[in-house]
Length: 434
Ligand code: ARG
Image 1 (cartoon, rainbow, N blue to C red):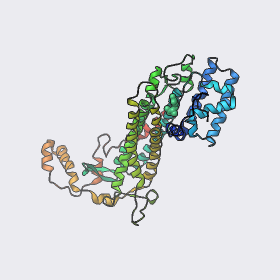
Image 2 (tube, rainbow, N blue to C red; image 1 turned 60 degrees about the vertical axis):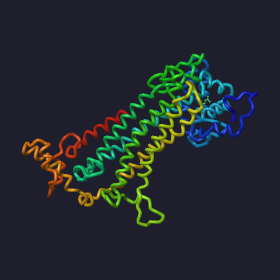
Image 3 (cartoon, rainbow, N blue to C red; image 1 turned 45 degrees about the vertical axis):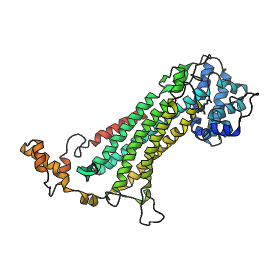
Image 4 (tube, rainbow, N blue to C red; image 1 turned 90 degrees about the vertical axis):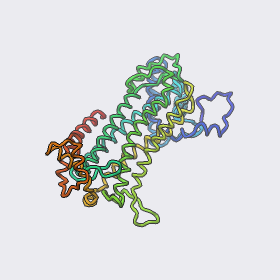
């Protein structure tokens, strides 16, 4: 395949050097195609606007890109190591189809701003997809929270039984966590919503590209102005994106860890349907919750990837450096992992059933001493510290669990989950997203 930087008097690159520098772009750039095509289309429209392409030429380019896009969707396009990346494949296609007209497309742009804009469009797209997955999962947790609103379970601090709570209260904590993760992702989406196209290799261009036009056409909120900063923001924007994703993965990892413990033989608070478990090749009785172990591990990968991306970009001389290409693997891998984990946790959640009797049998009566102390405060007007001393060592008998739960009325407490507020929040976030 013709390299974009080939000239007739250049010696052929050593094959190992070629493979080494192309790296995994031939795999991961497949995901960038739709966005690179879109940006190329808009760039061509911009060239027409400033008179570099005629109407007829620009129409030809639009048609060719539409055909190319269909080929990509149909799986007919592959990137080879010799191609280097998706940008080369698109340009070679246009030159093959349109000759000189195809050659004009690269006027006023560099692969450096081309990859920036494609990755940025990819991230914006991924953020809205992941945000909608977060809302879906929050909705599912909400349904479970409603269903088990009044089912008592022990609440823990320091891994010791602390106070009575409910399965609904526990599930609702994940509704709110996912809702916060979603708004955090939205703020990251706003932060990165800046158009780097037109910054060329990092130092602008003498071609009078209309950056305001391409910004509008590509649906960016604003222009990322300083052309050098466009380059130096590569890695910073990606790691901000990964920070958002890793917040989601931390939420899911905590849930996974809880459930791995709560479904163990020792706890038995929940049972897992066989459709979400795997077996052991040697121990016939085993029902393992592997998907949640992968979900927990995914958070570790996300954190590692975020650090890798920051490391890759923090100490480069200002401008483009090929190191930046290595950001793509952690970026795409993390996006896929978080999307998949959100979907899988949803499936798991649907197939977990609380075991009322096991939970009840596990309740430790010592857990109610704080309630006894609070009772003394409320009924006898005793100062809490004195009530605490008096209650220590008392053992509550015949506790009315339902009454105990419903007595905790402060906002967000087990007796006042405020579930309708979450339902309203999910509805309004969905509206914003669509
Ligand atoms: N594959 C390259 C990357 O992701 C594209 C940019 C190439 N630019 C260059 N000057 N070699 O970074």
